[in-house]
Length: 101
View 1 (cartoon, rainbow, N blue to C red):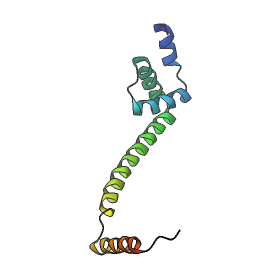
View 2: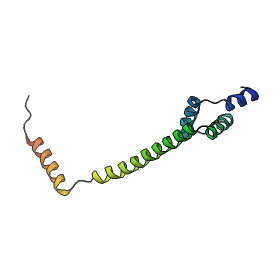
View 3: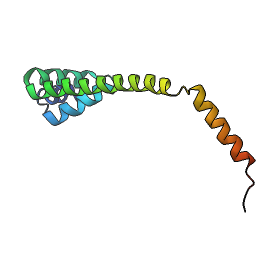
View 4: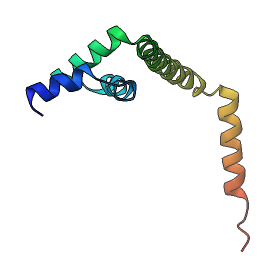
């Protein structure tokens, strides 16, 4: 894309393309023309600014949920002594039973 063509693209960025760039921006850095076009579009487009806030909020909520879930799962993974005894007893009983064929 020529410099002039890139500048024209940046100045005429549509909401659909902006939303794709906003999603891409979450995962990787944008190149110069994408960054410039998106910034210009965000200045003019209230809807895309709102969309940007929403996807950032969702990303933060998911990360917080994942961290919370991991911590909660680790706490839940600890078995009580009674549960350990029940499991050990069930294994012993299963091993003691004759196999039926």
